[in-house]
Image 1 (tube, rainbow, N blue to C red):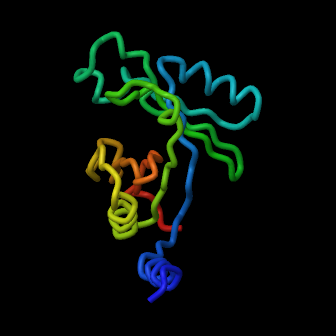
Image 2 (image 1 turned 90 degrees about the vertical axis):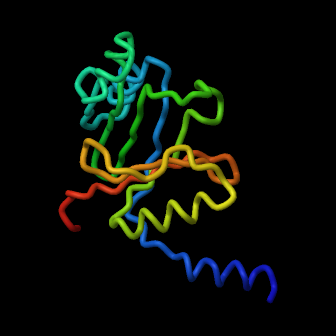
Length: 157
């Protein structure tokens, strides 16, 4: 079987009905400033959640209290997400943008996580979160960062 036939066969077997891919930016302490700037430039509704507003506050150093755990800027079909949560390697060119894969089912997120992690590195296994989602992240074999998310209590679309 030729390589193109193998690829076509794998694409058919691993087909996932994606809900949405969102750009996710990482900052080093200036997420609120950047997202406010983007809101001023692009409009939309901005949601910002500082670490001090979450159950994680007691588990992290006090100087991180004002850091942003998660923010979302939305307007019509446009969504931009961001955080100050930098990984152990620090913020380096190439890891400041991730692809956020918002899945529509638990089966879909598990299949996408398995498929994308082949030949790559899992950095955060899928797990239930305090905000009611199944979440995990990985770096694929090409070095791209992926955040996978399935909101378990979301209404069916």
